[in-house]
Image (cartoon, rainbow over all chains, first blue to last red; front, side, top):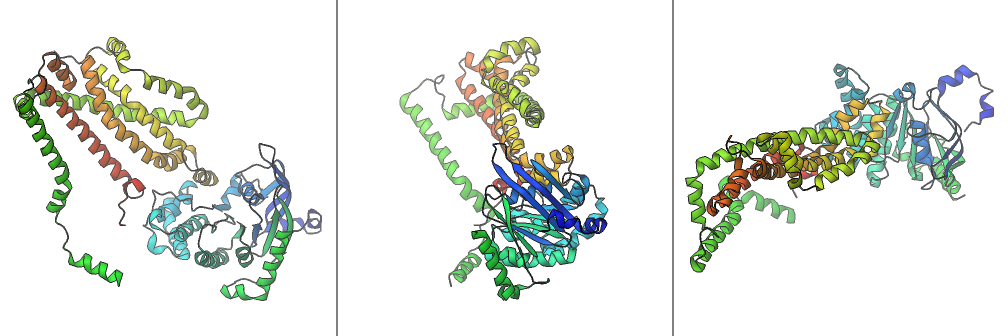
Amino acid sequence: MISADSIRDIEPQKLDARLLVHVREVNKRYGNGTLALEGINLEVREGEFISLVGPSGCGKSTLLRIIAGLGDVSDGLVTVNGAAPTSVRARASTAFVFQEATLLPWRPVRANVELPLELQGVSKANWKPVVDEILELVGLSKFDKAYPRELSGGMRMRVSIARALVTKPKLLLMDEPFGALDEITRQRLNSDLLRLKEILGATVIFVTHNVFEAVFLSSRIAIMSARPGRFVREVAVNAPYPRDATFRGSPEFGQAVMETVQSLEH
Amino acid sequence: MAIQKVSVLSTTSSEPSAVSKWFSKSLPPISALVVFLLLWQGIILISGLKRFVLPSPIDVVQSFIDKSPELLDAAGFTLRSSSIAFVLVILLGTIVSFVLASNKFIEKALYPYAVMLQSTPVIALAPIIIIWFGLGLGSIVVISVIIAIFAVVANTTQGLISVENNLQNLFKLYGASSNQTLLKLRLPFALPYMVTGWRIASAQVVIGSIVGEYMAGAGGGGQGGLGLVIAASSARLQTSYLFASALTSALIGVGFFLLVNFIGHLLLRNWHESAVQHEN
């Protein structure tokens, strides 16, 4: 992470153009007085893939929800796309993927993916091409009439991701989306996620406690400690995109995994 | 191998015809009924009980046939008051639930009184209702609504306040209006709960109508229904007629229930566990 001091050296306009998420000196105290987050600073630039990794209860999901505008900060400042997270401007550029697929069970796949367009008032005539494209990208074209209960956990999560991407968000926030899936499904979805990110050019902040997943996906990994949640270290994953399954066997992968694990034990 | 065996079995065994399917489903209850009727007739033959104490099944059937014009008439009236009450129960019950679920304060403020209304014996309210609405259809419907509405309110409210938190967050993130959240999220989410409420209420409005007719039926104006028939035949010790009218009431209740069940099935069959046909 670049500290607040080093930012000043860079030309402001140029910086603003690329800075998508800015979290500055954020503290978060729960109603019962527990300090959940302390002194959080985070800058995310367009095109980055950042994972927040840490033990249960370290506040990584809380931080993600704050960036999404679903929770308040106690102190500090958060901007998304240059505006407050709850602003129309920030909301229009953000999408969130929950831990569960969080689909509407009474709607078939297509209608679930259409939901964001519907809620944002996009004219109905424009839905079909966008939805067709995204269903094709996540490999669900043949399942557009299926109801969520007819799909496996992995496929439901694909629908959830398709729904998030249908608005072409600049920023994709993901809260342990693959935590409940088996390892094979998880690895396939990891590869697919990277592919989608490249095609759609989104920036991703990804919460997980799976170190291998974090290394495979991320350009940077921010490691957090528990109670109060604080950033203890950052690991840069020095491997170019696109990455495929062979990356898991490379020395860079092993190196980043080791660094991350050591920081977590710290 | 095991898989092959299964598939051979399922392809060689002929599909059961609709008639034999119906037969295998209906045989147990029909045989139970036959045994029951035989026992009933037998007890009367052996014990020599008087007809006004316990009429025989044949007496009841006879009474059905003799009194069928009156019974049909009364059943028609009961069906009418039950239907009116049912529509009112669903409309009012749903509106009340939305008000209760719209705001924690309102819910806390009003819920105890809803429970109180539900717990007050209708017999204590009947005289007041009759003073206000007079004998006949008006009072009967009001009594029926009071008896049945709580099931709709309790279930619908429960459904509306049970909406999954992250689904609400999702709607919030896309800037959904409160109307959109209501129509596209809360209402469909509450639907299975609402159907449960309708099912219970469907049986209760019939009971409520008959109780209402019993207490507020107006015989002269043809506004009596089965409740009044029951009151009158009990006063005259026409026990077999009493049995026939009780049976007619039960048939109306079952008919109502089946209708609501069918509507519920149509609404939920595609997506809700309660209405989905599983193959395993």
